[in-house]
Image (tube, rainbow, N blue to C red; front, side, top):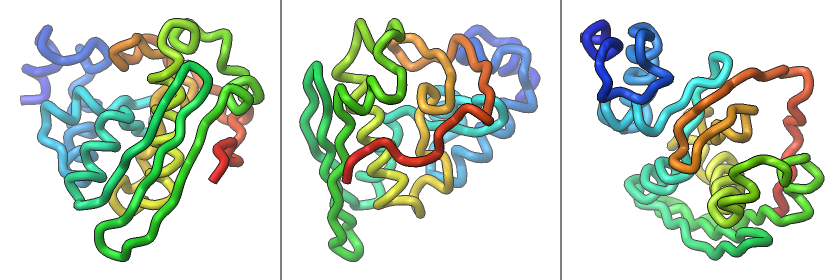
Length: 173
């Protein structure tokens, strides 16, 4: 089945001709509660590390009966979360200052879609901190792992030097 999908135009470009990546994404997706096709649309593999779109993170957290709400603007985002099981709450923000410190503001998507980019960074930080059990280590967006993505979240380039990634959180809690 994976070979057939790998040769299909219905799968995202990053999976075309990559049967083993289709299987890996589908297995990861199964572990977090995504169907095989949803996995191919929401999971991106950046240098061997799976990442989820912010849209998928919100969907999966809410599906697990947790709450995510917030606001976003052209200069930052604030995301509030509450666990459905324990009631624990947390807030994550990602601001223009955070984006500037991380060297993100020159990117095409940061110029064209700043609200979506701020939102994605704040969501992923909140999900890593408050809902790690839901995401099994995949609560990073492709952008955070160094991948270049289109406005729709499709990965177009993924050259990463892990020595240069600053794993210290730049999001304020």
